[in-house]
Amino acid sequence: MRRLSCILLALLVLLGASGCLVGRRPAPAQGDPQRAVRRVLPNGVRVVAQEHRASDVVALQLWVAAGGRDEAASELGLAHYLEHMLFKGTTTRPAGFIDREVEGVGGRMNAGTSLDYTYYHMLLPARRALAGIETLADISVNAALDENQLEREKRVVLEEMKLAEDTPSRLLARQLYEAVFDGHAYGRPVIGRPELIRALTRDQLLAFYRRHYVPESLTLVVVGAVRPDDVVEAATRAFGRFPRSGTQRLPAPPAASARPRQLQRLRPGAHAYLGLAWPAPRLDHADTPAVDLLTAVLGQGRASRLTRSLRERLGLVNTIATSYAALEAAGIVSITAQLEPANLERAEAGILEEVRRIARDGVSEAERERALTVAEARREFQMETAEGRAFTLGHAETIWTIEEELAYVDHLRSVTREQIRAAAVRYLDPERFARVVFTPEPAR
Image (cartoon, rainbow, N blue to C red):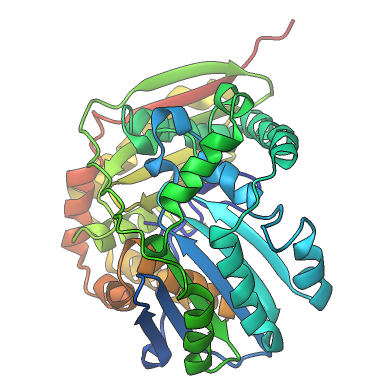
């Protein structure tokens, strides 16, 4: 999930540059849960609306239960590519509609593709809320997928791939996913592979669009200076006319417990990069809150163990961080560091020693309380904005439940020090982990 590690490394990597996010775990929707109205239209479209009048704006988001894990091997990258193309016009809105209908009224629009979902998000003046709902309904089923636009967009996506390859932190995160989830859909890059994108045809993309962008897969979330009843009425007019498809999304298969892989490669640059990763519990697992706090104690923030030990005391790393991504079908804990090549062996040994120590001796009450305070603060910060609230509600409705999301902070508060220690024993095996290392190419 993305909990304490709100911006997991994975996201840096697995998503395209159009704002894609893979794994970051949103903050639970704290406060005013009774004001969030949820309706399911007769055709299966879900509508979630919440009145939030901190400012005279409205956040509108369309969530689609289709991401990288829903692609066949021959479709790798199509969920992300389709996200790009939905901005290029529909059968009723020609190219440039974002400039006119969104940016032209002072708003903004973007999108993100992850392993578990795709979402499109707008921020508009509140008076434009109903028009924004119509726009999201239009792109959900009426994208033009113009052949010429499709070919031009290939250059953009291929450049995104090159950027990801040239950014060590993004590449490291992606390859840790490949190493941990070898053979599973979660181990494939959301952005796809160059050879498949170059060969992509409109017919392939249209087939993916028709198969996955169906009413039963759509969730509309609207949060801001609006009345929820007005939102539901507008959504019923805009989305309610689409016929039910009768299809259901296939569940993601569980990740196999194959031995994680090891990878070492040369890269340009002066620094080395070290990544260690372990399979971890999925989003709805009972151990998720304990693993969330464990990763915070271990490597999130200046007071965390790995930062104090390896960076501040020993000076072995320039940066070091721990992240936990809890996805719908599996999870991953990652520890990544940038360092001098000469320090690789000592840094890895130091990381594993801290892992052993936390499994053996547990954590202090002060560490548990610090991790919990950080988690609560991050959630409060996210819930200050309409966009943050909408993301939290949309994510929960798409791959979890809003009820569980609302209860999550209470689950965190109930985690004991012994449960954190037990999570370290259960999930962070110092003898069995994925390892990815980048070292500088030798000088010529």
